[in-house]
Image 1 (spheres, chains in turn blue, purple):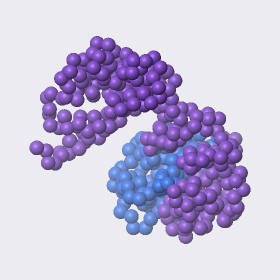
Image 2 (tube, chains in turn brown, orange):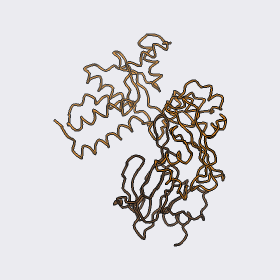
Image 3 (cartoon, helix red, strand yellow):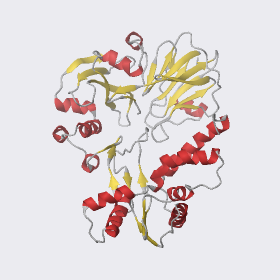
Image 4 (spheres, chains in turn red, purple):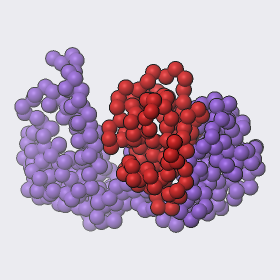
Length: 134
Length: 301
């Protein structure tokens, strides 16, 4: 498989990233282990019911940033169902042979290997438990 | 009689909710003419003759002062007189919460004569107002408003709300805080001298937890634990002084998985319940996954 870089993601998906991020660094692939992207985590879970809602061409904003920007965006040939429970936002399923991406302007992107994964939020203990919003 | 909402009505609830939230949070210029028309409708709905004397002020504070001055027939109302005038205020755009509820029923029950039409019209066009027998005091909408993602008043760099006459308020995630905490920032000593625990906690959050534990000289429970998926970076866990939060908490200090513009990495603190005793457990608690699984993380960004 060809090495994926931010430069190629910008070209292929029309995404934009913060200028200082390394355009030529290899984009990591998420497969067997959980991967945190700031205040969001993508986590492989065995036996998940696959998602059935096709991700539209413009992507799905799984978590929106504070001021509209800095959104964790899911793009590519994949399925995503919102299934909110506890910290879980939803489930993403990438079919065999497809490429999908969890992207964030400040954090870059993760390629997602075929399979089903939970997308989770991050929490903090304050007076009450609150979601982390970076 | 309505005993159950149709799917269409349920969908309208969402539309109405968003419509009224937007009214309540609007910083658009006041439409004084439309607001005055709404005021007259409200008087007539109550069977009263609307006054022809209308005073416009630029903020609820100025409106309360003007009302106190009129009611007490003085140019210099006392603070108590100003405070007392609050009890007779209508809140204009800030009546949105309860008006939204009745607005939905007006629509669903297809009521033709809406006795709240006047109050709604003022709400959609202006801010607080004071109806009286002989006169009415009306006020303009706020000119700026800043909220956090939970919809609480919040601005890290300036006032969270302002009115045209300068009336403003400083807030940190919904907590009112002294202006200089926001405009100048507090140092460690000023933070520790703060007697109000809630304000102190806001000040620490603004100061930065990682910086705070360093300045406070708190020793870590655990230090230098390799951060899974974040090569070369470590996790530290601290016990925070009691009474920062209602529940005792520990603080996990971590380093971002991505570089900042200047090549440095942002250090930040995450609070976890005090029963979480190791740095790795604290990191796993944040995402609510088992610590054994957290340890297998290959990459963090």
